[in-house]
Length: 114
Image (tube, rainbow, N blue to C red; front, side, top):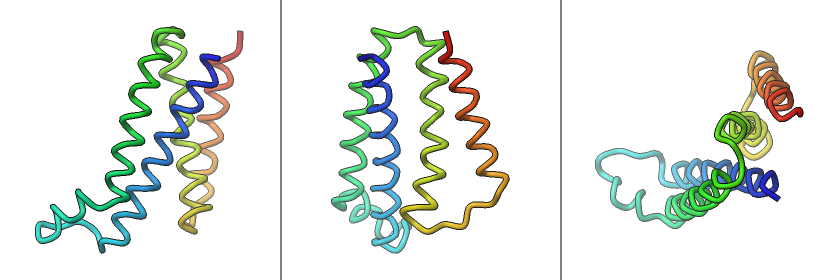
């Protein structure tokens, strides 16, 4: 159950980043002239809410798993983020980033192994 909560935490973090990226794209980026409207745009607020949920869930995860296990496993968010950048935004992801993501996944697997 703790691992499921950790995975949900990771998904919430990545989904929050996706919401922020879409919100910023729709706003034309962020600059002094649109700062307030960007900060209060629905997708930016959604990302903040997702991060708040992720933080609450992280507290639960930390109460059930050792930090030396949970925190390194949370790095899976980086690998999932690279996939999301490619899949959701159509970003061109060079081979070295895919290799880096694979190293992260491999490292997480090693850390999680008992």
